[in-house]
Length: 187
Ligand code: SF4
Picture 1 (tube, rainbow, N blue to C red):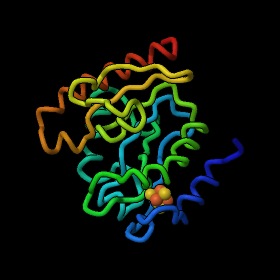
Picture 2: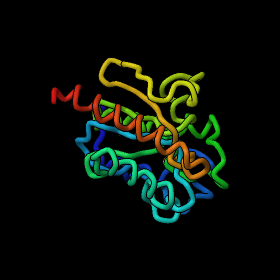
Picture 3: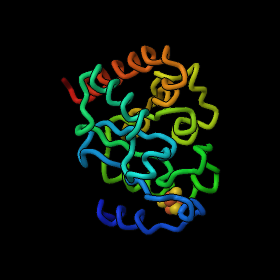
Picture 4: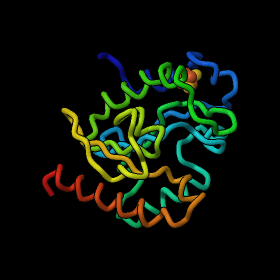
């Protein structure tokens, strides 16, 4: 696979592979360290991300930053992206054809990054990446192993905005993610 980060960025910036290209304001490329061991994947950019063209800004982004800080992580050492690079109007769930159209970009990002751990944020990402019948309420925090990386899922930060009591649950999942990262890095 011959591709560079810049090429992916350029393709996403001018992509018209699905109808979201007609309603988005700015496509949202993943962001973070190009050598991150930890990759976070959510379903799609929200309204604020659509305006700024940056993943996880706005209130969900603030919650994510709180979680990372509580677990001793910094955004600069992660790579954060979405399955869809363009905002679905009204924050609706991504449609299957949109996920299929956009998935190659995520594959390229994963290929270039070669993360040790992938964390799916929310049901939609977990069902697309871990298994179709993944139940986020019962299976968050569990681990699946693929050839080159470990996979887990937790709630999307927007779920914490709706139900503040989930914060501690997600924080515990992130503690385990940090432990797994240390274990895989031999620390
Ligand atoms: S969501 Fe993905 S496939 Fe659809 S227009 Fe945006 S970048 Fe292209």
